[in-house]
Length: 506
Ligand SMILES: Nc1ncnc2c1ncn2[C@@H]1O[C@H](COP(=O)(O)OP(=O)(O)OP(=O)(O)O)[C@@H](O)[C@H]1O
Image (cartoon, rainbow, N blue to C red):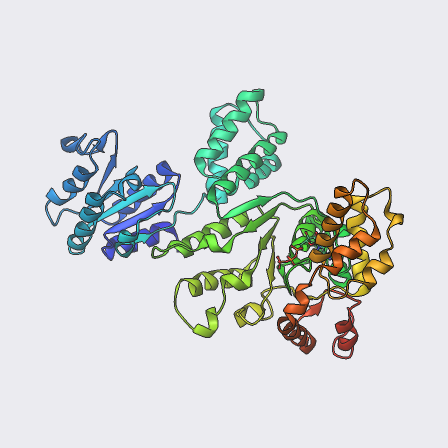
């Protein structure tokens, strides 16, 4: 639903306290004023800490530097006087006991009056005691059409012009930025060179990175890992390499849909996160990491609002890779509990997006525990493919030792007996192999010499691989994969031999 429709609905339904997390004061205030006008005789009152109330000549300055008075003003108006009270800066006072008490009392009395309080805030932090009476309303970032109007207006005001193609590129790169930031970055580029050039898109992208960092929901993840840093997992690598150009314009013209994403399931340390990073690098796309835990907040509507904000940002950065680590932990038991709680709603928003997604956001989710994953996530159409990432076979362990040793000792790789290392480390995961090498380096370093194959073997003998203590989990995952529920990331492990009867080779 569009902001104006949702806002109008809240006004009509007499929601007393509406909280809008946005940094775009000017744009949201214009939208509120338009909406209030469309609702009949509803006056809009604007308050800020320094100037108090503005707008109506009789009340100018009322409640200046006095947040409690700002609320008393609402009380003293006639009960049938319709009004929307937009309070800027007010989020800073919500922790104050007298303010929060007054707001709760007002919320009760305003239910029978055509008055609504709107709190604008650059962040979403609502104290516990106000969560019951507050409704969070999301204010979306500007649409492509709004951005285009703004960019054209700015360029015209500065007497600059761009070709249609350049303009489209600029508009596209501005997606995900607030109008304020768009103005700032374009003004900065023009101030720097006296004109706006296509190279200045770099400045816009940097501005976008900063915005994304500030949301604290998504992180820009720098990637250096490549597909050749992954030892083994040949089926998975082949799958990726085959989709190399799938995000290009050429692929669109060919009629290919943009790939949706992958779900990687397997025990800890088998290279799932490494794969997410390598995909971004391989396809030359920015990698955004989502911390699902940060989506959840206690206020009504807050978590869904953050989820939609996250989706909007990711789409604004498309084409990109969105990496969701440990998705099983975030949505554990959503379906089996059948609850209508926050995690179900967040999950619902996410899954609907995954199913309907047209944008070039490639989602890589990783999970350790298939049992706790909601079954809807595994249904066809959510991800392009579900891969089971098992423990590496002997051949794969050799490849993993080779990858790491060629980084650690590029000139002396031949000194290490890779076959022996792979043979002597059954059930080791990639992460454990890496850890064993670090341990071996400590041994060598403490004795003032380089580390040897024997040091690695000694370190390995002191390691109890997780596989030994997590046998049940592994068995469960293997049976699940063997039942044809997932494709094997590896070509060479025992399971693949077992499964060859069940699965067609790709
Ligand atoms: N197949 C592999 N090839 C090379 N290195 C690997 C491989 N698997 C794991 N590693 C090493 O182990 C580290 C940890 O692995 P990674 O974080 O990718 O595992 P994971 O499967 O995502 O584990 P978790 O479920 O705990 O997040 C990697 O950064 C990499 O150095």
